[in-house]
Image 1: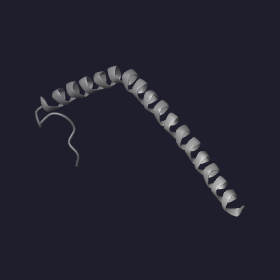
Image 2: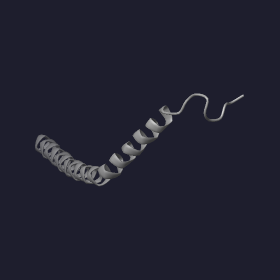
Image 3: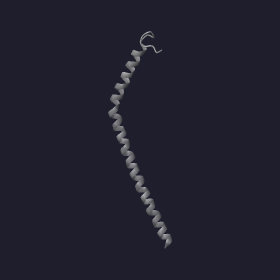
Image 4: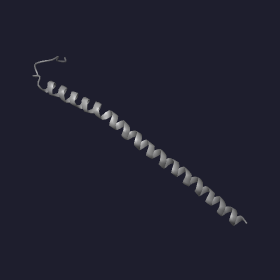
Length: 72
């Protein structure tokens, strides 16, 4: 009798763990889709920022060292 109860409880525990693992797997898939959607939405702004930083870096490197403010 005790063996049957132990085996039944073991299977019940495995079923609960399988259900939890399935829910985590679904959550990870949803999170991956959300990250992809966010990446696609932010890509144009990221490109614009990269272009702006490149433009500022080019303007900064074209200045001669005599220009600008010197620190004491």
